[in-house]
Length: 106
Image: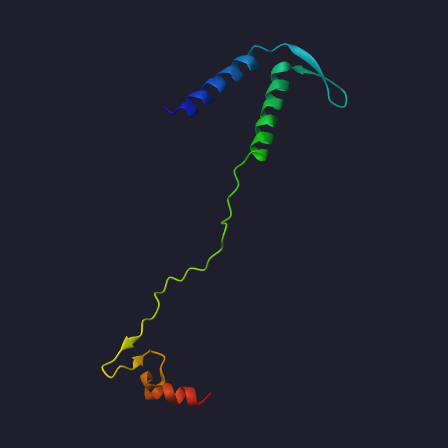
């Protein structure tokens, strides 16, 4: 078992011992006199403390320090043909007749 699990188990056992050893009736003032068991009062405040601690000390997602755009597509490399001219897939001489006709219609 991990140390964190052991510590939590020990703390829960201590809480259970404290709660069940305080069964006698007591009065509690909350906008009036309420006569109830100490067990209920202690358990209620213990649960409220857990909820409050969970809200206050929750871990928030860390935002990245820098926002960057990632491009999954590799860059298009230009090829050098035999006559030392650079050929790009977007160059006018690389277009088909159909593509040239489509561009002319614009």
